[in-house]
Image (tube, rainbow, N blue to C red; front, side, top):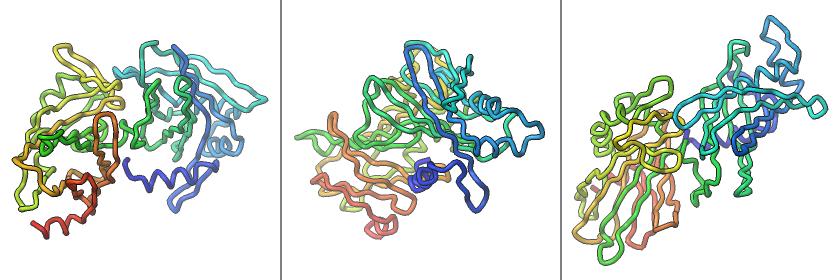
Length: 346
C-alpha cells in the first residue's frame, strides 16, 4: 500500500482501457466524482471496448448501457461510522457516453471512502476504476483509484494538502518533533497508522464487517504499546539505547480528532487511523541519533518519516526493511543508512 513503485506502475497503464500483465489483463474504467452539499455523483465513461470485455465472460448479454449501470452500482460509498450507501438513482447520457450514479450523504460529513464491491452480476475480472475528484472549495483536483483487489480510496472536503504529499488514510507516517531550547534534546515520535493496515497484524487489531468500536479497540491498547516498543529503537553515539515512554494510543476520526472518550463510537476501518505518541527524554543533546523501525510485513513495505516543526512538515525519506534506519543529525540533516551498517556501529 505504501509501495510507490507499484503505484507508479498503475499510473503508467492508467491511460489504456485494458492493460496487460504477464498474469492477466486489467480492465481500466475512468470517470469522475463530484461532491455537493448532500450528494455524491459518480460518472463513468462508457467505453464500448471495455464493456465488451466485461460482457465476454457472462452467459447473459445485457445491453452495454445496462452493463455500465451494473459497474456503477458496484461502487459503494462508506460513511465514517461504517454505514454503506448504495446509489439511489442513475442517469445515462447517450450522446456523452456516460452513466451517473447518485448517492445521498449527510451534510456534516467531511470525509468518505469509496470501495468497489463486484456484485454477482459482474464477471470476476481484474478491474480498476479511476475517478477524477475536484475539491471545489480548495480548487484542487486529484485522481482516486479503486480496484477489484479490495482497496479503498478516501475523498475529503476542505482538507488542506499535506506538505509531504502523502495519503494519511493509506500510508503510515512517522513524525519527529524536537523540544525547543533549552530542551532541544526532548524528542517526540508520532506514529500514525491507517487502521486497515494495522489489521495486517491480527494480534493487534481486527474488525467485523469493516467496522470497529472504540470499546473494542481499548482492549488492544496495551498490545499496541508493547508492539511499538519492540519495533522502534533509538541509538545514541555511545551505542546506548534511549528509553521510550508510550504516552498515548488513540483512534483518530477523519477530522484528526481523537475518537472515543466515555461515548461508545462505531467507526469504519477505511476512515479511521491509529495514533501512537512516544517520548524520549535525553540528558543532553547528542550529535546524532539513529532511529530504526522494524515493524514491516507484506502490506507495509515503507514508512514515511517527517520532521515537524510547528505547522511545517519536512519529509526526511522512507524507511524500508532494507533501509530501516534514519540518522537524525543535530543540524536537522537526515541521512539513511542500511540496517546492517547501523548494527555495525553498535
